[in-house]
Length: 147
Length: 180
Image (cartoon, rainbow over the protein chains, first blue to last red):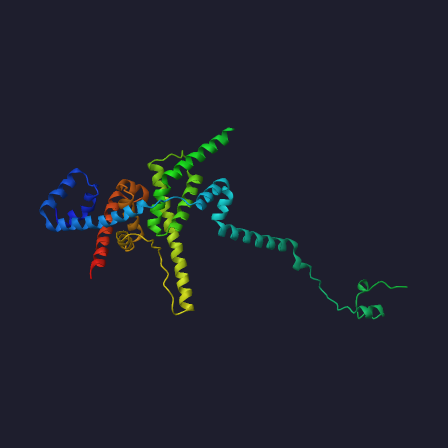
């Protein structure tokens, strides 16, 4: 005779008709003689009854996709690209931000704006230049002399 | 009407037939996992959209498509549960920093159902997600071990083993509630 532990491990399979011929017969024979396993079987049966009662309650509810869900499905079928963007909006936002930052960096690198800084800077007093005071400015930077 | 348009409209009508066939079962399944009809609606809507975009074969009701639908519904439900759990934890942390009297947010929505259903619902919540999935598929959806194995990727032996332990846990949970 099989030990009770082995039989009890098969009880749920037996009660849900998942057990093949010979093994089911073994379990059936054991249950005829063993009170402990009969009690274990009864407990599984009670548990399943409670679950099945809940199933009956749920089955009476009508489960149907709402109008909003149906419209969303139709929209996703007609616009697959937009649907993909909607589903992966964080990834798309990240890629767009990365593209913008990369473009700005590439522009700055190619334009080399920081390389065109003048070597010497001169403070310019426009009134002094007009009065002929040059302050050591090179000739090419002086305004044209007016006759 | 040109050929591609014919194919498109044929595929659309097949798809609508699939939706009518499986929407109730998938909504029930997702609802049992998530405990919220709104969350179940979002999940099942996503599942059908994925089906249309990724299913290359003919859209005909059958065991192959059924297995695929249940599997994807489960995976999307688990993702939704994880997102909800993270959001709940964030709210909890924010709330405890702000005020003393905070009502603990419910992690799952419990609709008004009979006492037996409420008892079953409470007992099911003592199981982990995998155990819940298998119990729901076996007891509520009447799937065989073979079908459950196809949906979950577990072996039939493993399915039986997990279900055996899940039923023991459920029995213990129900016994606990009945003690005075």
